[in-house]
Image (tube, rainbow, N blue to C red; front, side, top):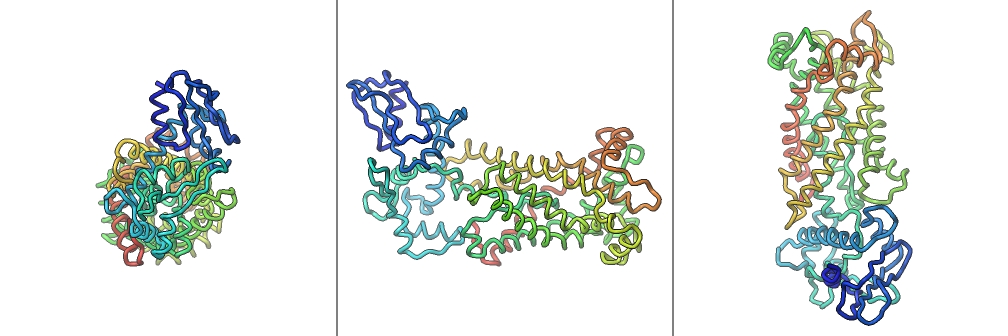
Length: 489
């Protein structure tokens, strides 16, 4: 068994020396953080000597961290083999993504094109330097050239040999294909912000992505606004005694205010997209710096923390607009002359505190929404890469849309009861003389009078809007990006 594994390792690592042929006599040692050389056994005749020479200590620590499955601070033989297999697969996906001509080689033009796709323009001379890049190894180790034979192209073997012991927590090309992008806008405001690479920030591509995402959100929310308003009405008015159906809800809206009433509250919903996105992005960037991460793409735990905090800051800043949206969606014909009139009347009659009704459940809802949304998305992404990503890192439009739709739906399902309580607290404040329940008392009242199902009133129209919202967002997002000069991969 060990002999076949040694043969496998010999195809990967140029620093494996074999003495003798009896591979089954090897006593497996481990690679430990902080060591430069680890011998597999004494170099006696008939035994195999494994010498792994890392380019520098930091690289060794990264390899150990990436492959250490049992978290004992050491990389044993089986863990090292598993790490090599997994890392090779990622490297192959990236290689095939860069190999635009599908000829098994990466040349200067393909490097230039790949970087252009990421928003970075380089000269042919700079691309040639990348091809001929030299990595200086350990003082006892060899000097490795990526282009070993001087052909000014890189084949798969050259690519693998150069990068295999360069552990990368995030392979940039794969991650850029799999960014949980702004296109997955289902009309909710709890999404974790996009992450932009250094190149995108330096070239100004980040604001183009934000503009495209904002435009896509405005169009998709406008198209699905009738379903959104129906959801709000069912959250507030539907009960065990008043089992409002979707058809009945639409009929009631049309009788009361005609077709235009289907879009009540949509204006403020669209207006708040721009400030919310900008505040969330800026807060996200500052929080990333605060937590001390120098990575372009955060890990899932860091992203959850940074995204949740950024969501809290953004929501706190625009929450009065959220209250206005709910009031405008629930208003009767002629009750308000517009958004400004609505805000003025709320301020005069109820005071400033009315603009923060339902604030606590709204903030609490961010954590399960963002957490489950990210966890499901990462799980689906990794499952697809493991099973189906054999020839390309690009999953295609339908896989991206499916992953985004499913993860957002799961996130909404988890946070929906908090969203319903928030909406009822906002609506209750508009009724003169009505009691103003707390979040806990409202939860208890709903469960006692309507059961657990009462916490999911309006869920059907909410789910119905997910697929059209995601699809519309994607189409509009891509078109706005093209018009702004952002190259799609």
